[in-house]
Amino acid sequence: MFICVRYDTSDEVLKEYCDKYSIEYLKYKDINSNNFLEKVKKYNCDLFVSMSFNQIFKKDIINMCRLKTINCHAGKLPFYRGRNILNWVLINDEQEFGITVHYVDSGIDTGDIIMQRSYKIKNSYTYQTLLEVSFMECANILYDSIKLLQQSNIEPIKQTTLNSVGFYCTQRKIGDEILNWNQTSREIFNFVRAICNPAPMARAFINGEEMKINKVEEIKNAPSYKCVIGAVLNKDNDGFLVKTNDNFVKVVEYEYDGKFRVGDRFEVK
Image (cartoon, rainbow, N blue to C red; front, side, top):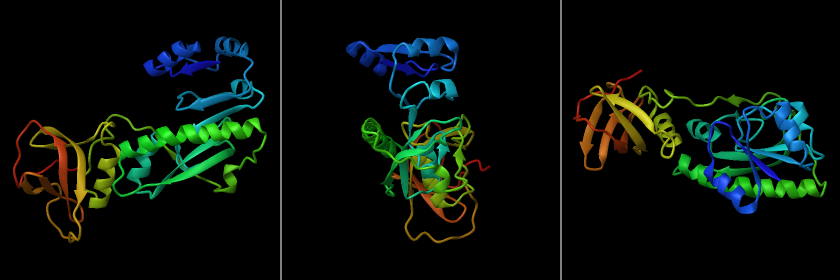
């Protein structure tokens, strides 16, 4: 048995786990290289399992094991293929998200589905909440899928039978955290909760200084009206109101070293 971690990270938790249970700890820049392939052939594994790995598998490694290679993906395939899915489902105001175990093929998250489960997203849920659910449920569904594979008791589902197109999400990068006030209050609420701690947090600029915003609240029954978007409308000990494209939201958790007052305006894209 071995564990191969991402080349660009140092996973101390897995390293300690490997040391404790005498599991070989590997890190390779190219898992499709002949060097890596020869290294792992000696294990004569029945199955390769991928989880949050960031390299594309090619056919030699995909087909090396008797039971092939599977991947656990925190997305409801064939939708939400790609990266940073837990952020994107909140940004898109989804009412549920999925976790899928599927065979790895030459595409990106396109292999036949072995098992898939869905989980409700409550209005109070944030990125942190979805992480906590995923940490637990990814392990559960992966275990159950491996047991089915051991029993040869599976009927894989081709993704095209669920939807002929599906869609992909791209990796979020530096700059994507900038908050656009020229959106509806619901869109801003979703954006902020999608990248709250432990993600980078939403960023906005007022009086030339950056503010980190970790939580906003929607205002029930707030009317839709025209005014200056990004303007600070009111301020109290619990936070402050900001005009959005349709009405306004209340910023209740934020980090800011500067000063601002009612009437000041956030920069708007």
